Amino acid sequence: MKKITTATTILFLLFAINTNAQPVKQITIDEAINIAIQNNQSVKASSIDIQAIESLRKTANELPKLDFNTQLGQYNSIKFDNAFQLSQTIPFPTLFGAKKELINAEVKAKQIQQQLTIYEIKNQVRSLFYQIEYLQYNKLKLQSLDSLYNEFIRVANLRYKTGDTKKIEISTAETKKGEINLLAQQNQVYLQNAYQSLKTILSSKDSITIVSSQTYTPLQVNSLIDSNAITSHPMLQSIYQNMQIAEQTKNVVKAQGLPDFKIGYSNQSLIGFQNIDGVDKYFGAGNRFNVVNIGVAIPLTFGATKARIKSLEYQKQSLQTQAEYQNTLLNTNLLNALTQYQQDVQQYNYYKIQALPNADNIVKAAQLGYRTGDITYVEYLYALQTATDIQLKYLQSIQQINQTVVNINSIINK
Image (cartoon, rainbow, N blue to C red; front, side, top):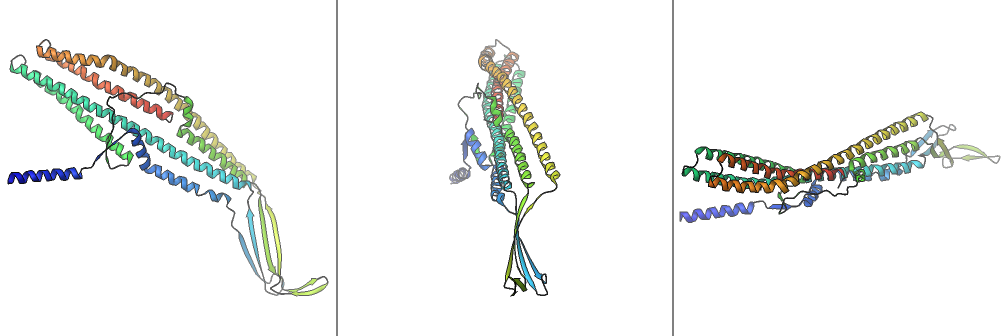
Protein backbone atom coordinates (compact mmCIF):
# COMPACT_ATOMS: atom_id res chain seq x y z
CA MET A 1 0.00 0.00 0.00
CA LYS A 2 2.85 2.40 0.81
CA LYS A 3 4.48 1.71 -2.58
CA ILE A 4 1.19 2.29 -4.37
CA THR A 5 0.54 5.51 -2.43
CA THR A 6 4.04 6.80 -3.13
CA ALA A 7 3.78 6.02 -6.85
CA THR A 8 0.37 7.68 -7.00
CA THR A 9 1.75 10.80 -5.31
CA ILE A 10 4.69 11.01 -7.72
CA LEU A 11 2.41 10.62 -10.72
CA PHE A 12 0.11 13.32 -9.36
CA LEU A 13 3.00 15.72 -8.83
CA LEU A 14 4.37 15.06 -12.30
CA PHE A 15 0.92 15.69 -13.78
CA ALA A 16 0.57 18.92 -11.79
CA ILE A 17 4.01 20.12 -12.88
CA ASN A 18 3.26 19.25 -16.51
CA THR A 19 -0.10 21.02 -16.29
CA ASN A 20 1.40 24.22 -14.87
CA ALA A 21 4.43 24.12 -17.13
CA GLN A 22 4.58 27.05 -19.50
CA PRO A 23 4.48 25.96 -23.15
CA VAL A 24 7.55 26.82 -25.19
CA LYS A 25 6.80 28.89 -28.26
CA GLN A 26 8.90 28.35 -31.36
CA ILE A 27 9.52 31.47 -33.42
CA THR A 28 11.30 32.32 -36.65
CA ILE A 29 13.35 35.44 -37.30
CA ASP A 30 10.45 37.19 -39.06
CA GLU A 31 8.03 36.28 -36.26
CA ALA A 32 10.48 37.58 -33.66
CA ILE A 33 10.79 40.91 -35.48
CA ASN A 34 7.01 41.28 -35.80
CA ILE A 35 6.45 40.48 -32.12
CA ALA A 36 9.13 42.95 -31.05
CA ILE A 37 7.64 45.75 -33.16
CA GLN A 38 4.09 45.07 -31.99
CA ASN A 39 5.01 44.92 -28.29
CA ASN A 40 7.71 47.60 -28.14
CA GLN A 41 6.68 50.49 -25.91
CA SER A 42 8.82 53.00 -27.81
CA VAL A 43 7.01 52.18 -31.04
CA LYS A 44 3.66 52.60 -29.29
CA ALA A 45 4.81 55.90 -27.81
CA SER A 46 5.89 57.04 -31.28
CA SER A 47 2.41 56.29 -32.62
CA ILE A 48 0.93 58.46 -29.88
CA ASP A 49 3.41 61.24 -30.72
CA ILE A 50 2.31 61.09 -34.36
CA GLN A 51 -1.34 61.36 -33.33
CA ALA A 52 -0.48 64.28 -31.05
CA ILE A 53 1.06 66.23 -33.94
CA GLU A 54 -1.67 65.24 -36.40
CA SER A 55 -4.29 66.57 -33.99
CA LEU A 56 -2.73 70.03 -34.41
CA ARG A 57 -3.68 70.27 -38.10
CA LYS A 58 -6.81 72.29 -37.31
CA THR A 59 -4.69 74.87 -35.50
CA ALA A 60 -3.16 75.93 -38.84
CA ASN A 61 -6.25 78.05 -39.57
CA GLU A 62 -6.46 79.49 -36.08
CA LEU A 63 -7.33 83.21 -35.87
CA PRO A 64 -6.36 85.57 -33.05
CA LYS A 65 -9.00 86.11 -30.39
CA LEU A 66 -11.95 88.35 -31.19
CA ASP A 67 -11.80 91.60 -29.20
CA PHE A 68 -15.05 92.79 -27.57
CA ASN A 69 -15.11 96.14 -25.77
CA THR A 70 -17.86 98.21 -24.20
CA GLN A 71 -18.00 101.91 -23.42
CA LEU A 72 -20.41 103.32 -20.83
CA GLY A 73 -20.74 106.90 -19.65
CA GLN A 74 -20.99 110.49 -20.72
CA TYR A 75 -18.73 110.33 -23.74
CA ASN A 76 -21.13 112.43 -25.94
CA SER A 77 -23.13 114.63 -23.57
CA ILE A 78 -24.37 114.66 -20.03
CA LYS A 79 -26.58 111.76 -21.00
CA PHE A 80 -25.44 108.20 -20.08
CA ASP A 81 -24.57 106.60 -23.38
CA ASN A 82 -23.36 103.11 -24.17
CA ALA A 83 -21.30 101.54 -26.97
CA PHE A 84 -19.66 98.25 -27.86
CA GLN A 85 -16.95 97.41 -30.33
CA LEU A 86 -15.90 94.18 -32.05
CA SER A 87 -12.41 93.85 -33.53
CA GLN A 88 -10.71 90.97 -35.32
CA THR A 89 -7.12 90.69 -36.54
CA ILE A 90 -6.63 88.52 -39.63
CA PRO A 91 -3.06 87.42 -40.42
CA PHE A 92 -1.73 87.55 -43.95
CA PRO A 93 -3.34 84.58 -45.78
CA THR A 94 0.00 82.89 -46.58
CA LEU A 95 0.51 82.25 -42.85
CA PHE A 96 -2.23 79.60 -42.78
CA GLY A 97 -0.66 77.59 -45.57
CA ALA A 98 2.81 77.91 -44.03
CA LYS A 99 1.56 76.63 -40.66
CA LYS A 100 -0.17 73.70 -42.36
CA GLU A 101 3.02 72.70 -44.20
CA LEU A 102 5.03 72.99 -40.98
CA ILE A 103 2.66 70.63 -39.15
CA ASN A 104 2.84 68.18 -42.07
CA ALA A 105 6.64 68.29 -41.89
CA GLU A 106 6.57 67.66 -38.12
CA VAL A 107 4.21 64.70 -38.59
CA LYS A 108 6.56 63.18 -41.13
CA ALA A 109 9.51 63.75 -38.78
CA LYS A 110 7.71 61.76 -36.08
CA GLN A 111 6.94 58.99 -38.57
CA ILE A 112 10.61 58.80 -39.56
CA GLN A 113 11.58 58.73 -35.89
CA GLN A 114 9.28 55.74 -35.46
CA GLN A 115 10.93 54.07 -38.45
CA LEU A 116 14.31 54.69 -36.81
CA THR A 117 13.08 52.98 -33.65
CA ILE A 118 11.82 50.01 -35.70
CA TYR A 119 15.15 49.92 -37.55
CA GLU A 120 17.04 49.63 -34.25
CA ILE A 121 14.65 46.92 -33.00
CA LYS A 122 15.17 44.86 -36.16
CA ASN A 123 18.95 45.04 -35.79
CA GLN A 124 18.81 44.02 -32.13
CA VAL A 125 16.47 41.09 -32.81
CA ARG A 126 18.51 39.84 -35.77
CA SER A 127 21.79 40.09 -33.89
CA LEU A 128 20.41 38.19 -30.88
CA PHE A 129 18.58 35.64 -33.03
CA TYR A 130 21.70 34.60 -34.92
CA GLN A 131 23.75 34.69 -31.74
CA ILE A 132 21.31 32.25 -30.15
CA GLU A 133 21.39 30.06 -33.24
CA TYR A 134 25.19 29.95 -33.06
CA LEU A 135 25.20 29.16 -29.34
CA GLN A 136 22.71 26.32 -29.85
CA TYR A 137 24.85 24.72 -32.54
CA ASN A 138 27.91 25.36 -30.39
CA LYS A 139 26.19 23.54 -27.54
CA LEU A 140 25.61 20.48 -29.74
CA LYS A 141 29.20 20.54 -30.92
CA LEU A 142 30.53 20.73 -27.36
CA GLN A 143 28.37 17.75 -26.45
CA SER A 144 29.88 15.87 -29.38
CA LEU A 145 33.40 16.82 -28.29
CA ASP A 146 32.57 15.69 -24.77
CA SER A 147 31.79 12.26 -26.23
CA LEU A 148 35.22 12.19 -27.85
CA TYR A 149 36.92 12.78 -24.52
CA ASN A 150 34.68 10.18 -22.87
CA GLU A 151 35.96 7.70 -25.45
CA PHE A 152 39.50 8.87 -24.67
CA ILE A 153 38.92 8.17 -20.96
CA ARG A 154 37.34 4.79 -21.69
CA VAL A 155 40.27 3.62 -23.81
CA ALA A 156 42.77 5.05 -21.31
CA ASN A 157 41.11 3.06 -18.51
CA LEU A 158 41.27 -0.16 -20.55
CA ARG A 159 44.94 0.37 -21.33
CA TYR A 160 45.62 1.22 -17.67
CA LYS A 161 44.02 -2.02 -16.52
CA THR A 162 46.16 -4.00 -18.95
CA GLY A 163 49.26 -2.15 -17.81
CA ASP A 164 49.88 -0.49 -21.18
CA THR A 165 49.63 3.04 -19.80
CA LYS A 166 49.94 5.07 -16.65
CA LYS A 167 47.43 6.84 -14.45
CA ILE A 168 48.57 10.21 -15.82
CA GLU A 169 46.87 9.50 -19.14
CA ILE A 170 43.51 9.07 -17.41
CA SER A 171 44.05 12.21 -15.33
CA THR A 172 45.01 14.20 -18.42
CA ALA A 173 41.98 12.99 -20.34
CA GLU A 174 39.66 13.84 -17.43
CA THR A 175 41.23 17.29 -17.18
CA LYS A 176 40.62 18.01 -20.87
CA LYS A 177 37.08 16.71 -20.53
CA GLY A 178 36.62 19.12 -17.61
CA GLU A 179 37.75 21.98 -19.83
CA ILE A 180 35.13 21.01 -22.42
CA ASN A 181 32.52 20.94 -19.65
CA LEU A 182 33.52 24.44 -18.59
CA LEU A 183 33.15 25.66 -22.16
CA ALA A 184 29.73 24.02 -22.30
CA GLN A 185 28.69 25.69 -19.03
CA GLN A 186 29.92 29.05 -20.26
CA ASN A 187 28.10 28.53 -23.55
CA GLN A 188 24.90 27.72 -21.62
CA VAL A 189 25.19 30.95 -19.62
CA TYR A 190 25.66 32.95 -22.83
CA LEU A 191 22.68 31.16 -24.33
CA GLN A 192 20.42 31.89 -21.36
CA ASN A 193 21.49 35.55 -21.32
CA ALA A 194 20.85 35.88 -25.05
CA TYR A 195 17.38 34.36 -24.70
CA GLN A 196 16.63 36.68 -21.78
CA SER A 197 17.75 39.71 -23.80
CA LEU A 198 15.62 38.58 -26.74
CA LYS A 199 12.57 38.15 -24.48
CA THR A 200 13.14 41.64 -23.13
CA ILE A 201 13.19 43.13 -26.62
CA LEU A 202 10.12 41.10 -27.56
CA SER A 203 8.41 42.31 -24.34
CA SER A 204 7.21 38.74 -23.95
CA LYS A 205 6.86 36.63 -20.83
CA ASP A 206 6.37 33.43 -22.83
CA SER A 207 9.06 30.80 -22.96
CA ILE A 208 10.48 30.94 -26.47
CA THR A 209 12.88 28.96 -28.58
CA ILE A 210 14.14 29.87 -32.02
CA VAL A 211 13.65 27.60 -34.99
CA SER A 212 17.03 26.55 -36.34
CA SER A 213 17.58 24.99 -39.73
CA GLN A 214 18.73 21.40 -40.09
CA THR A 215 22.19 22.52 -41.17
CA TYR A 216 24.08 25.52 -39.87
CA THR A 217 24.90 27.68 -42.89
CA PRO A 218 25.87 31.36 -43.09
CA LEU A 219 23.73 34.17 -44.44
CA GLN A 220 24.55 35.59 -47.84
CA VAL A 221 24.81 39.12 -49.20
CA ASN A 222 23.32 40.12 -52.51
CA SER A 223 26.20 40.67 -54.91
CA LEU A 224 24.38 43.69 -56.37
CA ILE A 225 24.16 46.16 -53.52
CA ASP A 226 22.97 49.61 -54.51
CA SER A 227 24.94 52.17 -52.52
CA ASN A 228 22.12 54.64 -53.19
CA ALA A 229 20.07 52.58 -50.74
CA ILE A 230 21.96 54.40 -48.00
CA THR A 231 19.93 57.53 -48.76
CA SER A 232 16.85 55.71 -47.43
CA HIS A 233 18.55 55.08 -44.08
CA PRO A 234 16.22 56.35 -41.30
CA MET A 235 19.05 58.26 -39.65
CA LEU A 236 19.71 60.24 -42.85
CA GLN A 237 16.01 60.66 -43.50
CA SER A 238 15.57 62.08 -40.01
CA ILE A 239 18.24 64.72 -40.64
CA TYR A 240 16.78 65.63 -44.04
CA GLN A 241 13.33 65.96 -42.50
CA ASN A 242 14.66 68.26 -39.79
CA MET A 243 16.03 70.39 -42.61
CA GLN A 244 12.54 70.46 -44.10
CA ILE A 245 11.12 71.54 -40.74
CA ALA A 246 13.65 74.39 -40.59
CA GLU A 247 12.61 75.45 -44.11
CA GLN A 248 8.91 75.36 -43.27
CA THR A 249 9.56 77.27 -40.05
CA LYS A 250 11.27 79.93 -42.15
CA ASN A 251 8.11 80.23 -44.25
CA VAL A 252 6.04 80.67 -41.11
CA VAL A 253 8.38 83.38 -39.82
CA LYS A 254 8.27 85.16 -43.18
CA ALA A 255 4.46 85.04 -43.21
CA GLN A 256 4.34 86.35 -39.64
CA GLY A 257 6.45 89.30 -40.78
CA LEU A 258 3.85 90.33 -43.37
CA PRO A 259 1.12 92.88 -42.56
CA ASP A 260 -1.98 91.83 -40.63
CA PHE A 261 -5.47 92.98 -41.58
CA LYS A 262 -7.92 94.36 -39.05
CA ILE A 263 -11.65 94.71 -39.24
CA GLY A 264 -13.88 96.21 -36.56
CA TYR A 265 -17.45 97.11 -35.88
CA SER A 266 -18.80 99.69 -33.40
CA ASN A 267 -22.37 100.21 -32.24
CA GLN A 268 -23.18 103.10 -29.94
CA SER A 269 -25.87 105.41 -28.64
CA LEU A 270 -25.74 109.24 -28.94
CA ILE A 271 -28.57 110.41 -26.71
CA GLY A 272 -29.73 113.92 -27.57
CA PHE A 273 -30.85 116.05 -30.48
CA GLN A 274 -29.31 115.58 -33.88
CA ASN A 275 -29.82 117.88 -36.85
CA ILE A 276 -31.30 115.91 -39.68
CA ASP A 277 -31.81 117.95 -42.88
CA GLY A 278 -32.03 121.16 -40.89
CA VAL A 279 -34.48 119.68 -38.41
CA ASP A 280 -33.52 118.84 -34.83
CA LYS A 281 -34.57 115.34 -33.95
CA TYR A 282 -34.22 113.61 -30.61
CA PHE A 283 -32.45 110.26 -30.46
CA GLY A 284 -32.78 108.04 -27.42
CA ALA A 285 -30.75 105.04 -26.17
CA GLY A 286 -32.61 102.74 -28.56
CA ASN A 287 -31.37 104.63 -31.59
CA ARG A 288 -28.00 103.17 -32.59
CA PHE A 289 -25.13 104.54 -34.64
CA ASN A 290 -22.87 102.03 -36.45
CA VAL A 291 -19.25 102.29 -37.56
CA VAL A 292 -17.06 99.78 -39.45
CA ASN A 293 -13.28 99.99 -39.09
CA ILE A 294 -10.80 98.49 -41.55
CA GLY A 295 -7.05 98.71 -41.04
CA VAL A 296 -3.63 97.20 -41.66
CA ALA A 297 -0.97 96.39 -39.03
CA ILE A 298 2.49 96.87 -40.51
CA PRO A 299 5.54 95.53 -38.64
CA LEU A 300 8.18 98.16 -38.07
CA THR A 301 10.97 95.94 -36.72
CA PHE A 302 11.97 94.12 -39.92
CA GLY A 303 15.36 93.31 -38.39
CA ALA A 304 13.84 90.88 -35.88
CA THR A 305 12.19 88.83 -38.64
CA LYS A 306 15.40 88.80 -40.67
CA ALA A 307 17.35 87.64 -37.61
CA ARG A 308 14.97 84.73 -37.05
CA ILE A 309 15.17 83.72 -40.71
CA LYS A 310 18.95 83.92 -40.66
CA SER A 311 19.09 81.77 -37.53
CA LEU A 312 16.90 79.12 -39.17
CA GLU A 313 19.09 79.21 -42.27
CA TYR A 314 22.15 78.51 -40.12
CA GLN A 315 20.30 75.59 -38.52
CA LYS A 316 19.49 74.22 -41.96
CA GLN A 317 23.13 74.53 -43.06
CA SER A 318 24.24 72.73 -39.90
CA LEU A 319 21.83 69.88 -40.60
CA GLN A 320 23.05 69.72 -44.20
CA THR A 321 26.62 69.33 -42.96
CA GLN A 322 25.53 66.58 -40.56
CA ALA A 323 23.71 64.78 -43.38
CA GLU A 324 26.76 64.89 -45.65
CA TYR A 325 29.00 63.59 -42.89
CA GLN A 326 26.57 60.82 -41.94
CA ASN A 327 26.22 59.82 -45.59
CA THR A 328 30.01 59.61 -45.96
CA LEU A 329 30.26 57.63 -42.73
CA LEU A 330 27.60 55.13 -43.83
CA ASN A 331 29.27 54.65 -47.21
CA THR A 332 32.60 54.04 -45.50
CA ASN A 333 31.00 51.59 -43.08
CA LEU A 334 29.37 49.78 -46.00
CA LEU A 335 32.66 49.42 -47.86
CA ASN A 336 34.38 48.20 -44.69
CA ALA A 337 31.56 45.74 -43.98
CA LEU A 338 31.69 44.35 -47.53
CA THR A 339 35.46 43.91 -47.24
CA GLN A 340 34.97 42.19 -43.89
CA TYR A 341 32.32 39.96 -45.45
CA GLN A 342 34.74 38.81 -48.16
CA GLN A 343 37.33 38.01 -45.51
CA ASP A 344 34.75 36.16 -43.40
CA VAL A 345 33.65 34.09 -46.41
CA GLN A 346 37.26 33.13 -47.20
CA GLN A 347 37.75 32.04 -43.61
CA TYR A 348 34.52 30.04 -43.65
CA ASN A 349 35.42 28.35 -46.94
CA TYR A 350 38.81 27.37 -45.53
CA TYR A 351 37.28 25.69 -42.50
CA LYS A 352 34.48 24.07 -44.52
CA ILE A 353 36.55 22.79 -47.46
CA GLN A 354 39.92 22.04 -45.87
CA ALA A 355 40.11 22.25 -42.10
CA LEU A 356 36.84 20.55 -41.14
CA PRO A 357 37.36 17.39 -43.26
CA ASN A 358 40.92 17.22 -41.97
CA ALA A 359 39.64 17.47 -38.41
CA ASP A 360 37.38 14.45 -38.94
CA ASN A 361 40.27 12.48 -40.41
CA ILE A 362 42.52 13.52 -37.56
CA VAL A 363 40.03 12.28 -34.96
CA LYS A 364 39.46 8.94 -36.69
CA ALA A 365 43.17 8.32 -37.20
CA ALA A 366 43.99 9.35 -33.62
CA GLN A 367 41.30 7.09 -32.14
CA LEU A 368 42.52 4.11 -34.12
CA GLY A 369 46.17 4.82 -33.39
CA TYR A 370 45.60 5.23 -29.66
CA ARG A 371 43.60 2.00 -29.42
CA THR A 372 46.31 0.06 -31.23
CA GLY A 373 49.09 1.79 -29.35
CA ASP A 374 50.65 3.33 -32.46
CA ILE A 375 50.53 6.82 -30.93
CA THR A 376 51.03 8.09 -27.40
CA TYR A 377 48.40 9.79 -25.30
CA VAL A 378 50.19 13.11 -25.86
CA GLU A 379 49.82 12.72 -29.63
CA TYR A 380 46.21 11.63 -29.19
CA LEU A 381 45.50 14.58 -26.92
CA TYR A 382 47.12 17.00 -29.37
CA ALA A 383 45.02 15.55 -32.19
CA LEU A 384 41.79 15.97 -30.21
CA GLN A 385 42.73 19.50 -29.23
CA THR A 386 43.45 20.39 -32.86
CA ALA A 387 40.15 18.90 -34.02
CA THR A 388 38.28 20.66 -31.23
CA ASP A 389 39.72 24.06 -32.15
CA ILE A 390 38.90 23.56 -35.83
CA GLN A 391 35.30 22.51 -35.22
CA LEU A 392 34.60 25.36 -32.80
CA LYS A 393 36.27 27.93 -35.06
CA TYR A 394 34.20 26.63 -37.97
CA LEU A 395 31.03 27.52 -36.07
CA GLN A 396 32.53 30.87 -35.10
CA SER A 397 33.26 31.61 -38.78
CA ILE A 398 29.55 31.15 -39.59
CA GLN A 399 28.53 33.39 -36.71
CA GLN A 400 31.03 36.04 -37.86
CA ILE A 401 29.51 36.03 -41.36
CA ASN A 402 25.98 36.29 -39.97
CA GLN A 403 26.82 39.28 -37.80
CA THR A 404 28.58 40.98 -40.72
CA VAL A 405 25.54 40.40 -42.93
CA VAL A 406 23.30 41.86 -40.22
CA ASN A 407 25.55 44.91 -40.15
CA ILE A 408 25.46 45.28 -43.95
CA ASN A 409 21.68 44.98 -44.06
CA SER A 410 21.35 47.56 -41.32
CA ILE A 411 23.50 50.05 -43.27
CA ILE A 412 21.41 49.67 -46.43
CA ASN A 413 18.20 49.60 -44.36
CA LYS A 414 17.16 46.18 -45.57
